[in-house]
Image 1 (tube, each protein chain N blue to C red):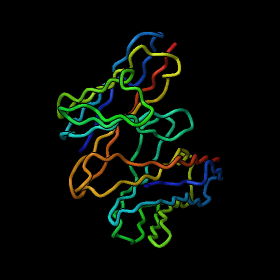
Image 2: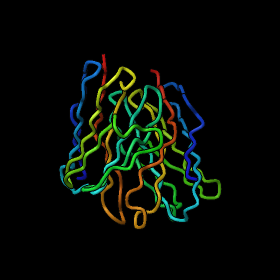
Image 3: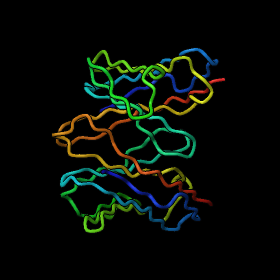
Length: 118
Length: 116
C-alpha cells in the first residue's frame, strides 16, 4: 500500500529560526514522484517541488531546501530563516509513475501546520 | 501553464438544495480530474476520479448519488452536491494531472461550501 506520513501535526517557531518538516513515505513502486505543497489560509494549494525517485540530489530554492533519502524513504523539507509569511499547512504527497497509471491521484500526508511568529 | 479554474470560490446554500461546482482546465486538456474534500484542519481526502466521457470512480464511503460528477469534455468537470445537508459543509478542491514524462498536478483554488 502507498502511504505518506507527516508525524508533526503542528510546529511553532519564531521568525528567523530554521524549521524542518518531516515526510516519510511507503510505496512498492520503484519509480514514483514526491511532492510538497503549501496551503495558506486562503486554501489554495501552492506547488513547491516535485522529485523523481531516481533523483536523490538535494535541492535548494532560496530559503527552501529538500532532503530526499531513499534509504529511509524520507523527503524532508527545511525552511531556513523562517518568516511570518511561511505560516501555512504543508503537505507532502506521493504519486505513482506517470506512464502506466495515468489516472492515479496524489496521496497526501495529513499535513503539518507551521506557525511562524514575529 | 496548466491552470485549473474552479468556481464558485464560496457558496452558501440551504439544506435540501443542490450546488454545482465547476472546474475548467484553461490551457491544457484534462483527461482525468480528481475531486477532493477537506475538513477543517485535516488533509485532502480523495472523493472520486473522473475521466472524460465515462463514469466517475468513487472512493469507498463516498455516496455516488449525493456527489454527482460529470466530465463531459476535456476541459470541464463538475461536482454537484445534491440535497445538501450541513454535514456536507466542507472545502472541495479539484485537481488535474498534466504532462506526460515531466508531469505534475495542478489544483483549483477550492470551493468553500456552507450548508445552512
